[in-house]
Length: 144
Image (cartoon, rainbow, N blue to C red):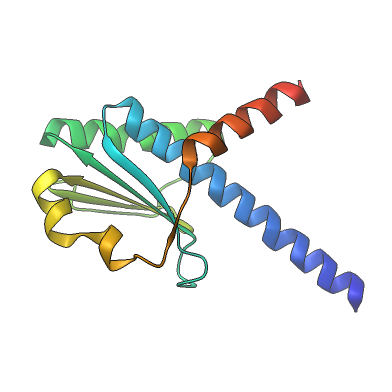
């Protein structure tokens, strides 16, 4: 029985690690396409529906589209992930991309301010995603 619990904990830890990698790569892709105020929120203790939120602000419809397309490209190419849901792409004031355990929110400035998700989810821990990304990069180099 103890072995089964250990295996279960190991699987959960592995899934969480993959979700975190997915979240920080999505945040990086948003920033690389000039997204502003990019945040990663750890939602694991607040909901069972998903593990991480990524929030980013764009300055135009074109930029929001570029961010969403870049995130899709990076997650599909590097991690083999496919988006399972997309909302708001046509309106382009708030695009929501669902990857199961990671949900990406791309806003224009006015919409982000109006809905203020980071205020709504103030109990969520902010993930220092640039540091996590650097740590992941160092681990990959060491493994080579």
